[in-house]
Amino acid sequence: MGKPSKLIDLRSDTVTLPTDEMREAIRHAELGDDVFREDPTVNTLEETAAELLGKDAALLVTSGTQANLVSLISNTKRGDMVLLEAESHIYWYEVGAISVVAGLLPWPIRSTSGALDPRRIQAALRPANIHFPDTTLICIENTHNRHGGTVITPRQIEAISEVAKTHGLKLYMDGARIFNAAVAQKINVKRLSKHVDNLMFCLSKGLSCPVGSIIVGDNEFIEKARKTRKTLGGGMRQAGVIAAPGIIALEKMITRLEDDHRNARILAEGLAKTPDIKLELDHVQTNIVYFNIYALGITSTQFVSKLKEQGILALTLDESTVRMVTHLGIEKSHIEETLAVIEGIIRNP
Image (cartoon, rainbow, N blue to C red; front, side, top):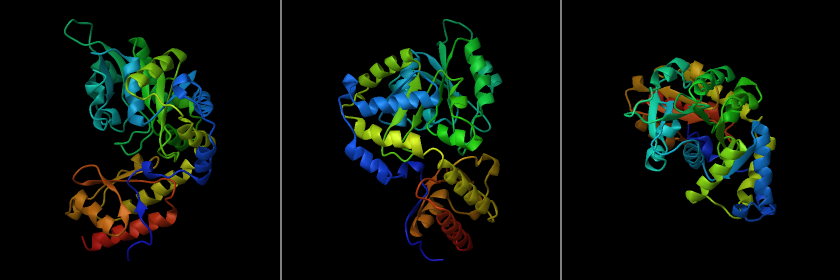
């Protein structure tokens, strides 16, 4: 099969473009100075987000990484220890900001599919001792990126929350793709936020906004987070141009995530039938697909390069693992084209 007629970008759902309605909303957004809390569009977005997640208040920030850093600082004090999953985004992909900026000691705990086992959390807790840092926070990630977009269930979150409460710890959720988790489980997102103290979610991934993330929590936490955001240079002025598409995203873009999950499943099932490609179908629960090409005798970098020659973009995880992510703009026909190209690469590696 020849090169696809258009570029098929499966690197990430961060490559999504705002809809025409979002672009118009940006153009017509009512604006004010958000540092003075006078941007009505930002205020509306934050109120909408807080209500949707069942929390008191919300705060708009520039990115998911900033959201996590602001939240880490606002939940702890310098020198504290933070328990988090060993493959978590905070630990792997945020330039060490948890230590460099927040001054915290991350303590990674391994899991099989992204959800922390309460028994392993319990085992990681240290007794009060002059030699040890204070453990004050547990972080979870839902969906879990490096585990293939796996979901954490309300029951699992509640079990982790019980450990946190027993030991006087805060529980924070990196919910960059929390709406994917809710849609995949066919539940109200409040069931996922109920047992965490605070959390963040991204507007700029599957929800298709050009920029921005939201932190939600109780009033005291959000006030602290607002000041922390300012400390990090994140105070914004006429930020309604960012908030306007976010309002549309929360009103209209959540249910369509089902399409992304459906396409990811088609991709995964097609790959699972392909000789010399290995993947864990059980881990394909949302819009992320990881697969191993070790048996092909080429590296993942070489494989991705061959895909790019055919107009398909993907990312590598390690020397033999490739990542593909479905999103707005990727249709079933693109998945079929991708599978056909991969079949051709396998025939002529």
